[in-house]
Amino acid sequence: MEDEFDRMRRHDAQPDIGSDLELYMPSMLRLNPRIPHYYGDAVRKCFLLIACGLIFLAPVSGGYLPGLLPFTIAGAVILVCLAALTNPKKQWVMVANSLVAAAGLIFSEMIALLAYASDEVVLFLAHQFMALVFLFALYFSMKTVRAMMLGTIGRRGRPSEVMDQDKQARLRHIRSFTDSGD
Image (cartoon, rainbow, N blue to C red; front, side, top):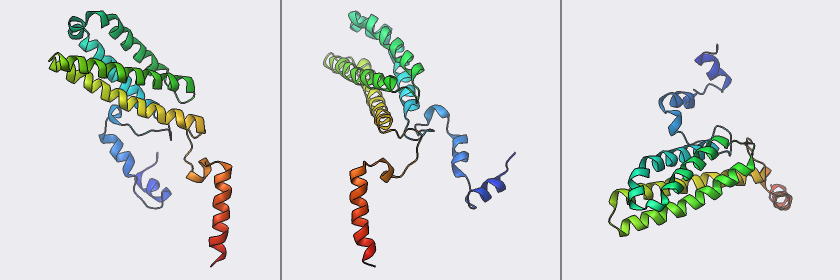
């Protein structure tokens, strides 16, 4: 088993502070990716939080808007299914996550505005909170879709590795002028 001394020697005598911080922060609260450029875990946490909120609010919102009760329960089921399917190898799941997050953001915000107009403060605050969580889910899922399209999932590359060939050629051309002037 590796001790602190071996770990410090391997990392050029710098203590491994990150591993100590992970001991104090529950894994459910961490949003930073363990796999570079993959934010599916954050999307999963957002979707599960919203699904719990939808199920918790179903009895209250069912009385306020009774026609939406089946859609609320179906929405929670869809969110849980997408959360379970989310993984760094399937781009279609992350695209579906993005579409569902966008639709959920619009839907939650519309319900929040209806509740606000009807002076239903608790429903307004709950759906406003869910709209904000959907906003984060949309952001993180789109970041992951972009990384999947660029092929950078799991890679910790420099920005020059992600640039297209034309930009790299222009950069080399500019550097050739600046390096020769020394």
